[in-house]
Length: 249
Image 1 (cartoon, one colour):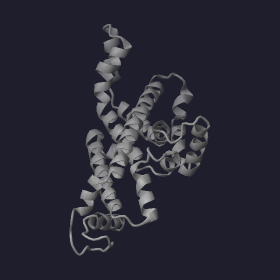
Image 2 (cartoon, rainbow, N blue to C red; image 1 turned 45 degrees about the vertical axis):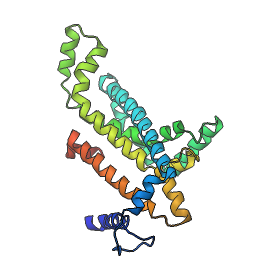
Image 3 (tube, helix red, strand yellow; image 1 turned 120 degrees about the horizontal axis):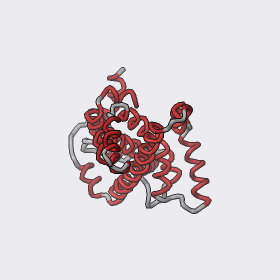
Image 4 (cartoon, rainbow, N blue to C red; image 1 turned 90 degrees about the horizontal axis):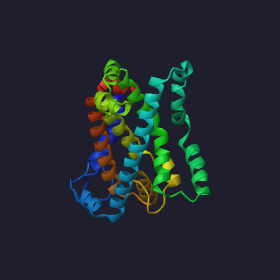
C-alpha cells in the first residue's frame, strides 16, 4: 500500500527532470531546463511570493488563536469548556467548496475578496484546529508548578508566560507553525475562490497551467512542494516527537 501511494510521486519527481516536453517515464534524457525556466518565470515567482505571504499570515493568525485558546482551556474552571474542544475540528469536516463559496460571499460583500487577508482567513480555518491540538498536547508536558513559583516570587503573569511557559512549549509552537504553513501551502479550493490575478498561490497557478495545457513546469513546482512538505514534517517530528505529531495529525 505504501509503495502504491509513493509510486505516483516517484513518477512525478522523475519526469520533472525530463529533457523534453512529452511526459515519458522513464524520461529518455535528464535535464534541468524546466527548473531553469521555473526560476526565470516571473509568473511562477510571483505565485511563490504570494504563497509565502499567505503562509506567513496563516502561521501568525492560526498560532496566535491556537495559543490563546489553549491557555483559555487550560486555565478555565468551567467543566464544559473542555468538552467543547472537539468542536474546534468542525471546519475540517466542512467541504472546502462550501467554505470557499461562503467566504467569497462574505468577503465579496465588503469588496475584500481577491486579497491576501481573505485567503489567510480561509487557510486559518483549517490550520487553527490542528495547531490548537498540537499546542494543547504540548501543554500537557508543561511543569505548571514553575508558573506558580514564579508568581509567588513576584513575577507578573505576562512575564511568567514569556519566561517560564513559552520556553517549555517553543518546540510545539515551532511544529504547529510548520504544520500551518504546510496546510496553507497545499490548500487549493478555497484559494481558487478567493484569489485574484495578483494573489494567485502556487496550487491555483498550477491548476490554471494544467487546465490549459500540460506545462512541464508544474512537475517542477510539485517536486519542490513535495520536498518542502517532507522537510517541514521531519522538522516537526524532531521538534515534538514523531508519535505525538502522528496522533495530532
